[in-house]
Image (cartoon, rainbow over all chains, first blue to last red; front, side):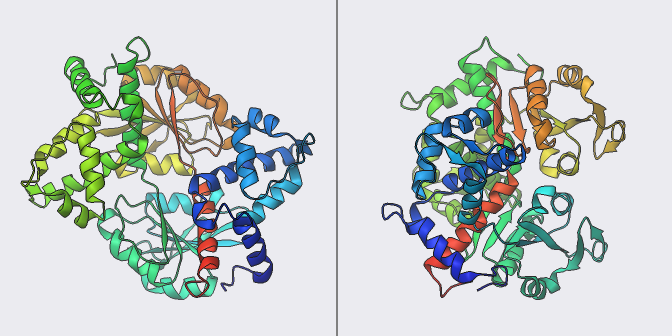
Length: 241
Length: 241
Protein backbone atom coordinates (compact mmCIF):
# COMPACT_ATOMS: atom_id res chain seq x y z
CA UNK A 1 0.00 0.00 0.00
CA UNK A 2 1.35 3.42 -0.87
CA UNK A 3 2.46 5.87 1.82
CA UNK A 4 -0.25 8.31 0.61
CA UNK A 5 -2.89 6.29 2.43
CA UNK A 6 -2.70 6.31 6.18
CA UNK A 7 -5.62 3.99 6.92
CA UNK A 8 -5.69 1.39 4.19
CA UNK A 9 -8.16 -0.92 5.89
CA UNK A 10 -10.83 1.71 6.38
CA UNK A 11 -10.44 3.10 2.87
CA UNK A 12 -10.51 -0.31 1.26
CA UNK A 13 -13.74 -1.05 3.08
CA UNK A 14 -15.45 2.23 2.17
CA UNK A 15 -14.26 1.80 -1.38
CA UNK A 16 -15.80 -1.63 -1.65
CA UNK A 17 -19.01 -0.35 -0.15
CA UNK A 18 -19.08 2.58 -2.52
CA UNK A 19 -18.08 0.90 -5.72
CA UNK A 20 -19.30 -2.63 -5.18
CA UNK A 21 -22.21 -2.11 -2.83
CA UNK A 22 -24.75 -2.27 -5.60
CA UNK A 23 -24.35 -5.54 -7.51
CA UNK A 24 -25.90 -3.93 -10.62
CA UNK A 25 -22.90 -1.58 -10.79
CA UNK A 26 -19.53 -3.30 -10.62
CA UNK A 27 -16.51 -0.93 -10.69
CA UNK A 28 -16.03 -1.36 -14.41
CA UNK A 29 -19.41 0.17 -15.08
CA UNK A 30 -18.77 3.45 -13.28
CA UNK A 31 -17.82 5.84 -16.04
CA UNK A 32 -15.34 8.69 -15.85
CA UNK A 33 -18.25 11.03 -16.63
CA UNK A 34 -20.12 9.88 -13.52
CA UNK A 35 -17.01 10.44 -11.42
CA UNK A 36 -16.56 13.88 -13.02
CA UNK A 37 -20.12 14.78 -12.01
CA UNK A 38 -19.46 13.60 -8.44
CA UNK A 39 -16.49 16.02 -8.42
CA UNK A 40 -18.79 18.84 -9.56
CA UNK A 41 -21.36 18.03 -6.86
CA UNK A 42 -18.63 17.97 -4.24
CA UNK A 43 -17.30 21.33 -5.35
CA UNK A 44 -20.80 22.81 -5.29
CA UNK A 45 -21.43 21.41 -1.80
CA UNK A 46 -18.15 22.87 -0.51
CA UNK A 47 -19.23 26.24 -1.85
CA UNK A 48 -22.59 25.94 -0.08
CA UNK A 49 -20.85 24.87 3.11
CA UNK A 50 -18.64 27.98 2.97
CA UNK A 51 -21.82 30.04 2.61
CA UNK A 52 -23.32 28.42 5.70
CA UNK A 53 -25.99 26.35 3.90
CA UNK A 54 -26.79 23.28 6.01
CA UNK A 55 -29.38 21.43 3.88
CA UNK A 56 -30.25 21.38 0.23
CA UNK A 57 -32.60 19.44 -2.05
CA UNK A 58 -31.46 18.01 -5.38
CA UNK A 59 -33.72 20.56 -7.12
CA UNK A 60 -32.12 23.50 -5.30
CA UNK A 61 -28.64 22.14 -5.92
CA UNK A 62 -29.45 21.72 -9.62
CA UNK A 63 -30.90 25.22 -9.99
CA UNK A 64 -28.06 26.89 -8.14
CA UNK A 65 -25.23 25.26 -10.10
CA UNK A 66 -26.82 24.73 -13.54
CA UNK A 67 -27.05 20.97 -13.10
CA UNK A 68 -29.78 18.34 -13.62
CA UNK A 69 -31.68 17.25 -10.50
CA UNK A 70 -32.63 13.89 -12.05
CA UNK A 71 -28.97 13.27 -12.84
CA UNK A 72 -27.91 14.23 -9.31
CA UNK A 73 -30.39 11.76 -7.77
CA UNK A 74 -29.39 9.04 -10.23
CA UNK A 75 -25.65 9.54 -9.67
CA UNK A 76 -25.90 9.58 -5.90
CA UNK A 77 -28.21 6.53 -5.91
CA UNK A 78 -25.48 4.65 -7.79
CA UNK A 79 -23.31 4.89 -4.71
CA UNK A 80 -26.03 4.03 -2.25
CA UNK A 81 -28.01 7.29 -2.11
CA UNK A 82 -27.37 9.80 0.62
CA UNK A 83 -30.52 11.94 0.77
CA UNK A 84 -33.65 11.65 2.87
CA UNK A 85 -36.87 12.00 0.87
CA UNK A 86 -38.54 15.34 1.54
CA UNK A 87 -35.64 16.54 3.72
CA UNK A 88 -32.86 16.87 1.15
CA UNK A 89 -29.17 16.41 1.72
CA UNK A 90 -27.10 17.37 4.75
CA UNK A 91 -24.53 19.53 2.94
CA UNK A 92 -21.50 18.94 5.19
CA UNK A 93 -22.20 15.23 5.54
CA UNK A 94 -22.74 14.61 1.83
CA UNK A 95 -19.57 16.59 1.04
CA UNK A 96 -17.63 14.38 3.44
CA UNK A 97 -19.15 11.21 1.96
CA UNK A 98 -18.28 12.26 -1.59
CA UNK A 99 -14.75 13.19 -0.49
CA UNK A 100 -14.28 9.67 0.90
CA UNK A 101 -15.88 8.13 -2.18
CA UNK A 102 -13.40 9.97 -4.44
CA UNK A 103 -10.50 8.98 -2.14
CA UNK A 104 -9.46 12.61 -1.79
CA UNK A 105 -9.61 12.53 1.99
CA UNK A 106 -5.83 12.04 2.03
CA UNK A 107 -2.94 13.95 0.42
CA UNK A 108 -2.34 13.13 -3.24
CA UNK A 109 1.17 14.05 -4.38
CA UNK A 110 1.95 15.08 -7.94
CA UNK A 111 5.15 15.23 -9.97
CA UNK A 112 5.30 17.38 -13.10
CA UNK A 113 7.51 16.09 -15.88
CA UNK A 114 8.41 18.82 -18.38
CA UNK A 115 8.73 22.30 -16.87
CA UNK A 116 8.00 24.46 -19.93
CA UNK A 117 5.05 26.87 -20.15
CA UNK A 118 2.35 24.39 -19.16
CA UNK A 119 4.38 22.53 -16.52
CA UNK A 120 5.42 25.81 -14.91
CA UNK A 121 1.85 27.14 -14.89
CA UNK A 122 0.57 23.94 -13.28
CA UNK A 123 3.30 23.97 -10.61
CA UNK A 124 1.84 27.30 -9.48
CA UNK A 125 -1.81 26.41 -10.20
CA UNK A 126 -3.92 26.73 -7.02
CA UNK A 127 -6.12 23.72 -7.95
CA UNK A 128 -2.99 21.50 -8.02
CA UNK A 129 -1.72 22.87 -4.71
CA UNK A 130 -4.73 22.97 -2.43
CA UNK A 131 -6.94 20.58 -0.51
CA UNK A 132 -5.91 17.07 -1.35
CA UNK A 133 -3.35 17.86 -4.06
CA UNK A 134 0.30 18.88 -3.73
CA UNK A 135 2.88 19.29 -6.46
CA UNK A 136 6.04 17.86 -4.89
CA UNK A 137 8.59 18.21 -7.71
CA UNK A 138 9.16 19.23 -11.31
CA UNK A 139 11.47 17.41 -13.73
CA UNK A 140 13.21 18.52 -16.88
CA UNK A 141 16.17 17.61 -19.09
CA UNK A 142 17.20 21.23 -19.76
CA UNK A 143 20.27 22.06 -17.61
CA UNK A 144 19.22 25.73 -17.64
CA UNK A 145 15.98 24.83 -15.83
CA UNK A 146 17.34 22.28 -13.34
CA UNK A 147 17.76 23.66 -9.83
CA UNK A 148 15.29 26.52 -10.32
CA UNK A 149 12.31 26.99 -8.01
CA UNK A 150 8.86 27.39 -9.53
CA UNK A 151 6.11 28.16 -7.05
CA UNK A 152 6.33 25.44 -4.41
CA UNK A 153 8.63 23.10 -6.34
CA UNK A 154 12.22 22.69 -7.38
CA UNK A 155 13.11 21.52 -10.89
CA UNK A 156 15.10 18.28 -10.77
CA UNK A 157 16.89 16.24 -13.43
CA UNK A 158 14.98 13.32 -15.00
CA UNK A 159 17.45 10.87 -13.47
CA UNK A 160 15.99 11.67 -10.04
CA UNK A 161 12.42 10.78 -11.04
CA UNK A 162 12.23 7.27 -9.65
CA UNK A 163 13.95 8.17 -6.35
CA UNK A 164 11.68 11.18 -5.80
CA UNK A 165 8.52 9.23 -6.66
CA UNK A 166 9.51 6.59 -4.11
CA UNK A 167 10.55 9.09 -1.46
CA UNK A 168 7.44 11.28 -1.75
CA UNK A 169 4.88 8.60 -2.51
CA UNK A 170 3.64 10.58 -5.52
CA UNK A 171 0.89 8.63 -7.34
CA UNK A 172 0.09 11.21 -10.02
CA UNK A 173 2.30 12.56 -12.81
CA UNK A 174 1.66 15.42 -15.19
CA UNK A 175 3.32 14.80 -18.57
CA UNK A 176 4.05 18.19 -20.15
CA UNK A 177 6.97 17.55 -22.48
CA UNK A 178 7.06 18.30 -26.24
CA UNK A 179 5.34 15.78 -28.54
CA UNK A 180 8.55 14.18 -29.78
CA UNK A 181 9.73 13.34 -26.24
CA UNK A 182 6.37 12.18 -24.92
CA UNK A 183 6.45 8.41 -25.54
CA UNK A 184 9.85 7.62 -23.93
CA UNK A 185 9.16 10.01 -21.02
CA UNK A 186 5.75 8.39 -20.51
CA UNK A 187 7.42 4.95 -20.35
CA UNK A 188 9.91 6.29 -17.80
CA UNK A 189 7.03 7.59 -15.65
CA UNK A 190 5.10 4.32 -15.91
CA UNK A 191 8.27 2.40 -15.00
CA UNK A 192 8.35 4.13 -11.60
CA UNK A 193 5.01 2.50 -10.77
CA UNK A 194 2.98 5.72 -10.93
CA UNK A 195 -0.55 4.55 -11.83
CA UNK A 196 -1.98 7.84 -13.17
CA UNK A 197 -0.73 10.28 -15.79
CA UNK A 198 -2.33 13.54 -16.89
CA UNK A 199 -0.91 14.01 -20.38
CA UNK A 200 -0.64 17.42 -22.08
CA UNK A 201 1.59 16.24 -24.95
CA UNK A 202 -0.31 16.13 -28.26
CA UNK A 203 0.41 12.44 -28.79
CA UNK A 204 -1.59 9.22 -28.45
CA UNK A 205 0.43 7.25 -25.90
CA UNK A 206 0.93 3.48 -26.15
CA UNK A 207 -1.06 1.54 -23.55
CA UNK A 208 0.98 0.46 -20.51
CA UNK A 209 -0.74 -1.99 -18.13
CA UNK A 210 -1.28 -0.53 -14.68
CA UNK A 211 -0.93 3.07 -15.85
CA UNK A 212 -4.06 5.08 -16.65
CA UNK A 213 -3.70 8.13 -18.87
CA UNK A 214 -6.02 11.12 -19.06
CA UNK A 215 -5.33 13.23 -22.12
CA UNK A 216 -5.76 16.97 -22.04
CA UNK A 217 -5.45 18.05 -25.61
CA UNK A 218 -6.08 21.76 -25.68
CA UNK A 219 -5.60 22.19 -29.38
CA UNK A 220 -8.13 19.46 -30.12
CA UNK A 221 -10.57 21.32 -27.88
CA UNK A 222 -10.06 24.44 -29.99
CA UNK A 223 -10.60 22.46 -33.19
CA UNK A 224 -13.81 21.01 -31.76
CA UNK A 225 -15.08 24.49 -30.85
CA UNK A 226 -14.29 25.78 -34.34
CA UNK A 227 -16.09 22.86 -36.00
CA UNK A 228 -19.29 23.24 -34.02
CA UNK A 229 -19.31 27.05 -34.22
CA UNK A 230 -19.21 26.84 -38.01
CA UNK A 231 -21.72 23.96 -38.09
CA UNK A 232 -24.25 25.86 -35.99
CA UNK A 233 -23.71 29.08 -37.94
CA UNK A 234 -24.49 27.10 -41.10
CA UNK A 235 -27.56 25.49 -39.56
CA UNK A 236 -28.93 28.90 -38.52
CA UNK A 237 -27.43 31.48 -40.91
CA UNK A 238 -29.28 34.36 -39.26
CA UNK A 239 -27.48 33.94 -35.96
CA UNK A 240 -23.90 34.79 -35.06
CA UNK A 241 -21.53 34.47 -38.02
CA UNK B 1 -19.92 36.61 -42.10
CA UNK B 2 -16.91 37.10 -39.86
CA UNK B 3 -13.66 38.52 -41.22
CA UNK B 4 -11.93 35.25 -40.30
CA UNK B 5 -13.35 33.63 -43.42
CA UNK B 6 -12.11 34.97 -46.73
CA UNK B 7 -14.16 32.77 -49.04
CA UNK B 8 -17.49 32.28 -47.37
CA UNK B 9 -19.22 30.68 -50.36
CA UNK B 10 -16.69 27.98 -50.86
CA UNK B 11 -16.47 27.16 -47.18
CA UNK B 12 -20.22 27.10 -46.73
CA UNK B 13 -20.48 24.67 -49.63
CA UNK B 14 -17.74 22.34 -48.39
CA UNK B 15 -19.23 22.49 -44.93
CA UNK B 16 -22.62 21.41 -46.19
CA UNK B 17 -21.04 18.62 -48.22
CA UNK B 18 -19.04 17.45 -45.24
CA UNK B 19 -21.67 17.66 -42.58
CA UNK B 20 -24.83 17.10 -44.53
CA UNK B 21 -23.64 14.97 -47.45
CA UNK B 22 -24.84 11.77 -45.85
CA UNK B 23 -28.55 12.04 -45.06
CA UNK B 24 -28.17 9.41 -42.32
CA UNK B 25 -25.92 11.82 -40.40
CA UNK B 26 -27.36 15.31 -39.96
CA UNK B 27 -24.99 17.78 -38.20
CA UNK B 28 -26.58 17.20 -34.81
CA UNK B 29 -25.48 13.57 -34.87
CA UNK B 30 -21.78 14.26 -35.27
CA UNK B 31 -20.39 13.99 -31.79
CA UNK B 32 -17.53 15.98 -30.31
CA UNK B 33 -15.70 12.67 -29.85
CA UNK B 34 -15.86 11.99 -33.59
CA UNK B 35 -14.50 15.45 -34.32
CA UNK B 36 -11.75 14.92 -31.72
CA UNK B 37 -10.74 11.71 -33.52
CA UNK B 38 -10.68 13.55 -36.86
CA UNK B 39 -8.24 16.02 -35.23
CA UNK B 40 -6.05 13.12 -34.11
CA UNK B 41 -6.08 11.59 -37.61
CA UNK B 42 -5.15 14.93 -39.12
CA UNK B 43 -2.26 15.39 -36.70
CA UNK B 44 -1.02 11.87 -37.46
CA UNK B 45 -1.25 12.50 -41.22
CA UNK B 46 0.70 15.77 -40.91
CA UNK B 47 3.43 13.86 -39.07
CA UNK B 48 3.54 11.23 -41.84
CA UNK B 49 3.64 13.98 -44.46
CA UNK B 50 6.63 15.57 -42.74
CA UNK B 51 8.32 12.16 -42.84
CA UNK B 52 7.70 11.87 -46.58
CA UNK B 53 5.05 9.13 -46.40
CA UNK B 54 2.78 9.42 -49.47
CA UNK B 55 0.23 6.64 -48.90
CA UNK B 56 -1.04 4.74 -45.91
CA UNK B 57 -3.71 2.15 -45.18
CA UNK B 58 -6.06 2.47 -42.23
CA UNK B 59 -4.32 -0.56 -40.64
CA UNK B 60 -0.88 1.05 -40.92
CA UNK B 61 -2.22 4.37 -39.62
CA UNK B 62 -3.82 2.57 -36.68
CA UNK B 63 -0.71 0.58 -35.79
CA UNK B 64 1.59 3.58 -36.06
CA UNK B 65 -0.44 5.92 -33.85
CA UNK B 66 -2.12 3.51 -31.41
CA UNK B 67 -5.55 3.96 -33.00
CA UNK B 68 -8.32 1.59 -34.17
CA UNK B 69 -8.44 0.88 -37.91
CA UNK B 70 -12.16 0.01 -37.80
CA UNK B 71 -12.83 3.32 -36.09
CA UNK B 72 -10.73 5.22 -38.65
CA UNK B 73 -12.69 3.70 -41.56
CA UNK B 74 -16.01 4.30 -39.80
CA UNK B 75 -15.18 7.92 -38.95
CA UNK B 76 -13.94 8.79 -42.43
CA UNK B 77 -16.93 7.03 -44.05
CA UNK B 78 -19.19 9.33 -42.01
CA UNK B 79 -17.87 12.26 -44.04
CA UNK B 80 -18.05 10.51 -47.39
CA UNK B 81 -14.98 8.22 -47.17
CA UNK B 82 -11.71 9.27 -48.72
CA UNK B 83 -9.79 6.01 -49.25
CA UNK B 84 -9.53 3.73 -52.25
CA UNK B 85 -10.00 0.04 -51.40
CA UNK B 86 -6.68 -1.83 -51.57
CA UNK B 87 -4.73 1.39 -52.23
CA UNK B 88 -5.10 3.21 -48.92
CA UNK B 89 -5.19 6.93 -48.34
CA UNK B 90 -3.23 9.63 -50.14
CA UNK B 91 -1.64 11.21 -47.04
CA UNK B 92 -1.34 14.82 -48.26
CA UNK B 93 -4.78 14.81 -49.87
CA UNK B 94 -6.57 13.30 -46.89
CA UNK B 95 -4.80 15.78 -44.59
CA UNK B 96 -6.04 18.64 -46.77
CA UNK B 97 -9.58 17.23 -46.84
CA UNK B 98 -9.69 16.86 -43.04
CA UNK B 99 -8.30 20.39 -42.64
CA UNK B 100 -11.15 21.73 -44.76
CA UNK B 101 -13.67 19.55 -42.95
CA UNK B 102 -12.54 20.97 -39.58
CA UNK B 103 -12.60 24.54 -41.00
CA UNK B 104 -9.01 25.08 -39.92
CA UNK B 105 -7.89 26.07 -43.41
CA UNK B 106 -8.18 29.71 -42.34
CA UNK B 107 -6.76 31.72 -39.41
CA UNK B 108 -8.69 31.33 -36.14
CA UNK B 109 -8.04 34.17 -33.72
CA UNK B 110 -8.17 33.71 -29.95
CA UNK B 111 -8.54 36.14 -27.05
CA UNK B 112 -7.50 35.07 -23.55
CA UNK B 113 -9.52 36.53 -20.71
CA UNK B 114 -7.70 36.26 -17.39
CA UNK B 115 -3.91 36.50 -17.63
CA UNK B 116 -2.88 34.62 -14.48
CA UNK B 117 -0.79 31.42 -14.54
CA UNK B 118 -2.93 29.51 -17.01
CA UNK B 119 -3.76 32.46 -19.29
CA UNK B 120 -0.11 33.45 -19.43
CA UNK B 121 1.01 29.88 -20.22
CA UNK B 122 -1.56 29.61 -23.02
CA UNK B 123 -0.57 32.96 -24.54
CA UNK B 124 2.89 31.44 -25.07
CA UNK B 125 1.66 27.91 -25.85
CA UNK B 126 2.90 26.79 -29.29
CA UNK B 127 -0.35 24.87 -30.05
CA UNK B 128 -2.33 28.13 -29.63
CA UNK B 129 0.09 30.10 -31.80
CA UNK B 130 0.79 27.90 -34.79
CA UNK B 131 -0.94 26.74 -37.94
CA UNK B 132 -4.51 27.95 -37.87
CA UNK B 133 -4.53 29.45 -34.36
CA UNK B 134 -3.31 32.86 -33.16
CA UNK B 135 -3.68 34.45 -29.76
CA UNK B 136 -4.39 38.10 -30.56
CA UNK B 137 -4.86 39.65 -27.12
CA UNK B 138 -5.01 38.98 -23.40
CA UNK B 139 -7.41 40.71 -20.99
CA UNK B 140 -7.31 41.28 -17.27
CA UNK B 141 -8.73 43.55 -14.59
CA UNK B 142 -5.48 43.82 -12.61
CA UNK B 143 -3.87 47.23 -13.30
CA UNK B 144 -0.44 45.71 -12.56
CA UNK B 145 -0.87 43.31 -15.48
CA UNK B 146 -2.42 45.68 -18.02
CA UNK B 147 0.03 46.91 -20.67
CA UNK B 148 2.47 44.01 -20.20
CA UNK B 149 3.52 41.82 -23.11
CA UNK B 150 3.26 38.05 -22.71
CA UNK B 151 4.67 36.08 -25.60
CA UNK B 152 2.95 37.44 -28.70
CA UNK B 153 0.22 39.38 -26.90
CA UNK B 154 -0.34 42.52 -24.93
CA UNK B 155 -2.55 42.51 -21.82
CA UNK B 156 -5.48 44.89 -22.23
CA UNK B 157 -8.19 46.09 -19.84
CA UNK B 158 -11.54 44.24 -19.89
CA UNK B 159 -13.25 47.38 -21.20
CA UNK B 160 -11.46 46.88 -24.53
CA UNK B 161 -12.78 43.34 -25.03
CA UNK B 162 -15.66 44.08 -27.38
CA UNK B 163 -13.67 46.52 -29.52
CA UNK B 164 -10.74 44.11 -29.87
CA UNK B 165 -13.01 41.16 -30.69
CA UNK B 166 -14.64 43.21 -33.43
CA UNK B 167 -11.37 44.62 -34.75
CA UNK B 168 -9.53 41.28 -34.86
CA UNK B 169 -12.43 39.01 -35.79
CA UNK B 170 -11.58 36.68 -32.90
CA UNK B 171 -14.12 33.83 -32.69
CA UNK B 172 -12.57 31.92 -29.80
CA UNK B 173 -12.11 32.99 -26.20
CA UNK B 174 -10.19 31.30 -23.42
CA UNK B 175 -11.77 31.97 -20.03
CA UNK B 176 -9.05 31.71 -17.39
CA UNK B 177 -10.28 33.89 -14.53
CA UNK B 178 -10.78 32.77 -10.90
CA UNK B 179 -13.97 30.83 -10.12
CA UNK B 180 -15.74 33.74 -8.43
CA UNK B 181 -15.37 36.01 -11.48
CA UNK B 182 -16.17 33.38 -14.10
CA UNK B 183 -19.93 33.82 -14.60
CA UNK B 184 -20.01 37.61 -15.19
CA UNK B 185 -16.86 37.47 -17.33
CA UNK B 186 -18.36 34.63 -19.36
CA UNK B 187 -21.50 36.73 -19.97
CA UNK B 188 -19.29 39.64 -21.08
CA UNK B 189 -17.51 37.36 -23.56
CA UNK B 190 -20.76 35.92 -24.90
CA UNK B 191 -22.16 39.47 -25.28
CA UNK B 192 -19.41 40.29 -27.79
CA UNK B 193 -20.85 37.60 -30.09
CA UNK B 194 -17.94 35.18 -29.65
CA UNK B 195 -19.47 31.74 -30.32
CA UNK B 196 -16.87 29.53 -28.63
CA UNK B 197 -15.34 29.60 -25.16
CA UNK B 198 -12.70 27.30 -23.74
CA UNK B 199 -13.30 27.53 -20.00
CA UNK B 200 -10.61 26.81 -17.39
CA UNK B 201 -12.56 28.27 -14.45
CA UNK B 202 -13.79 25.53 -12.09
CA UNK B 203 -17.42 26.58 -12.48
CA UNK B 204 -20.45 25.26 -14.36
CA UNK B 205 -21.41 28.21 -16.57
CA UNK B 206 -25.04 29.12 -17.28
CA UNK B 207 -26.12 28.28 -20.83
CA UNK B 208 -26.09 31.25 -23.22
CA UNK B 209 -27.71 30.63 -26.64
CA UNK B 210 -25.23 30.94 -29.50
CA UNK B 211 -22.20 30.41 -27.26
CA UNK B 212 -20.68 26.95 -26.96
CA UNK B 213 -18.50 26.20 -23.97
CA UNK B 214 -15.84 23.53 -23.68
CA UNK B 215 -14.79 22.96 -20.08
CA UNK B 216 -11.24 22.05 -19.21
CA UNK B 217 -11.36 21.15 -15.58
CA UNK B 218 -7.89 20.02 -14.64
CA UNK B 219 -8.67 19.33 -11.02
CA UNK B 220 -11.59 17.11 -11.98
CA UNK B 221 -9.22 15.19 -14.24
CA UNK B 222 -6.93 14.60 -11.26
CA UNK B 223 -9.85 13.46 -9.13
CA UNK B 224 -10.91 11.04 -11.88
CA UNK B 225 -7.38 9.60 -12.08
CA UNK B 226 -7.25 9.15 -8.31
CA UNK B 227 -10.62 7.39 -8.25
CA UNK B 228 -9.77 4.88 -10.97
CA UNK B 229 -6.24 4.25 -9.67
CA UNK B 230 -7.65 3.26 -6.29
CA UNK B 231 -10.51 1.28 -7.88
CA UNK B 232 -8.16 -0.77 -10.04
CA UNK B 233 -5.72 -1.32 -7.17
CA UNK B 234 -8.65 -2.72 -5.18
CA UNK B 235 -9.82 -4.90 -8.06
CA UNK B 236 -6.33 -6.40 -8.54
CA UNK B 237 -4.49 -6.08 -5.22
CA UNK B 238 -1.39 -7.82 -6.53
CA UNK B 239 -0.67 -5.13 -9.10
CA UNK B 240 0.68 -1.64 -8.59
CA UNK B 241 -0.31 -0.26 -5.18
